[in-house]
Amino acid sequence: MSDTTAGRIRETGIVAIVRGTDADAAIETVDAIRRGGVPTVEITANTEGVLGMIGDVSSSFAADEVTVGAGTVLDAETARAATLAGAEFLVTPSFDEGVVRVANRYGKPSLVGIATPTEAVRAFEAGADMVKVFPAGTLGPEFVSSLGGPLGHIPTVPTGGVSLGNVRAFFDAGATAVGVGSSIADTDAVARGDFETIEENARAFVAEVEDARSE
Image 1: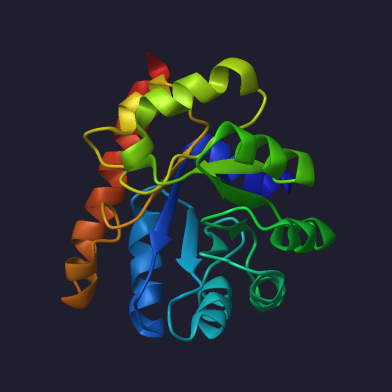
Image 2 (image 1 turned 30 degrees about the vertical axis):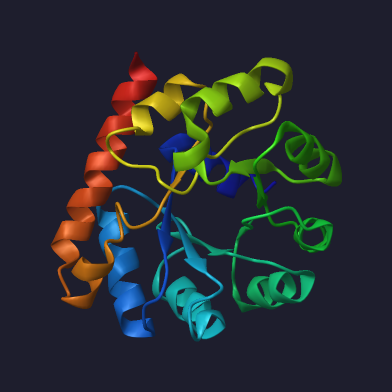
């Protein structure tokens, strides 16, 4: 895993997820997230024009300002295309060995979706850098805690249903970081150009994570 990318994900403890927007709004959304204190942003591959969007966002910020990754990566072809477009890390909703192989070939971190201990072990043994516990809102902090018993060496990133109301519980359960979608990059706020709200959302999550880690 890239030391710089790994450090950013671990230090902030948050990967903000942007999906279903256009290129202009994506840049402003990412900028708002950055201003709110979250430098790691995932743009989902099921967003129309995602490859160009990843390139545009990457070129709009200095390397020390924002690290952009691709999410909802389902296969090796998408993984390679996203990497060549400028994605610095790859995130999947499920375990696909081909995606992990491409990530490792290009030296990019992979956060691989899992929902069982068996999947977690298989993903990690295949070379995944972290496992994305998904859907976290359904599995809950208790699952993360239980997974950490026998598999505490595998870094976990709960994603899907993470909110200000439960983010502390996930860190208390041992999460390395969390993936946060609409609770930061609120779809309605993006649509109406309310980027101040997005910045405030990001700032609130950063504060909550810092408080959780300080206890």
